[in-house]
Image 1 (cartoon, rainbow, N blue to C red):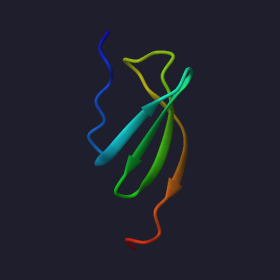
Image 2: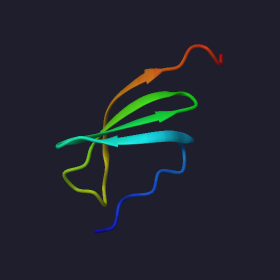
Image 3: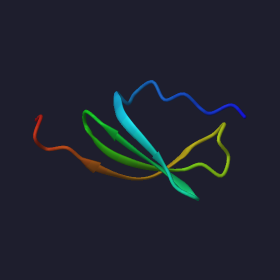
Length: 52
């Protein structure tokens, strides 16, 4: 299986759940649907306001 590579997120950690990935990064927390791992679909994002 080949996962999609995301160039625009500088990630710290990735947590895989049964239906989604949680990605923590410099600019916030992202949630992705990975039913198709080659084509991730962003479901939500919580922006990190501390670095603005």
